[in-house]
Length: 228
Length: 228
Image (cartoon, rainbow over all chains, first blue to last red):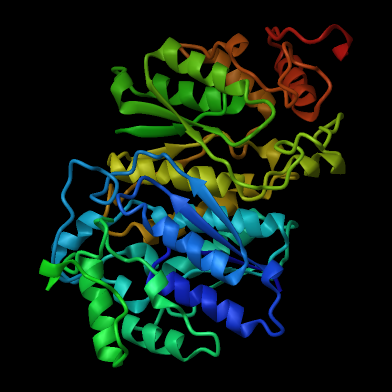
């Protein structure tokens, strides 16, 4: 079965990609392709990491540029990225309106074009309190809509695969480290600031280091010296 | 109420735009904006017409470039545009996989960002047999999904307005010609070939001329000499 994987270059989507690659035996790299999005995020650096993962695996990688005026601290340089834990209300500033519907719809269109059987995305349970478009009820509703919108085209069984939507990032890191071909987490990028090193203090950095700590797995990330 | 109108530059979306402008009294051009998409369509010329309509009305117009590998005779130069009536099976080649989900999702994201109250799109009943993403059940399902995906952000009453989804193109032309500020149909573009003049023979040209004929309204379109 062909798969289209939405890949940000972060921990969750990288693990989703490696899950697909590990699950497809014998490995057929030509059946897996990754889509990344340059949507004006200030941590556009993540795309370099996405490209690196795809090169490592020898799979196709397409970067789609989106220049859409969507209000968010992630895309508007004059706004500041909030520091602190994800659960804080301030993290709502990092919501990019309708981001997942846009990306998943584009990935679905590519999947229909190529008669792929699944569109894979890495949202996880920790995203739910902040990002409404990471919740299972949204993914189910979108899948229903997109099936109606493409009736008669592509693979009629085309589905979303969101293997981590009910899992914590800790469990994701634990799972990805245990794959026969484990996820090279040193080759992933999380930090919203997109500087040379992970800042260690923004919401996604806090979540990243917590995940490794709780999973009891050495964190391969180099954080900025004052990041702790 | 603010509106975001998806505008191709063709008859249907131009009429939808003019409906919104005519319905908002007193006219507040700053409350209406149009989004057009450059998605590699060979009739990219339609965007010039979209821009012209917006300039005429004095409203904001944003063109969003999408470079996505979607298989279609409309976007792949090596494939031929089929001639003949829309109802013919060959017109299925002009389907662009998931096009409306992608465009409507982007428009919805812009609407959430600006706290607009409606996203307006011009699909009509004649589209249904060929384009599954022009059917009302798709639009309703997508609206449901997008509301879930943006819970807590934007205007909670944000909706799709698809005023012509149950109307024929003939009725659209009749309605748009009767507005207090009528639609300048000479400033719209339909032809899939995107040459200097409308070819008069592709599916959308056939539909365009039929609509004017049946509505009993003079067709302002100049067709290629051998187009009839």
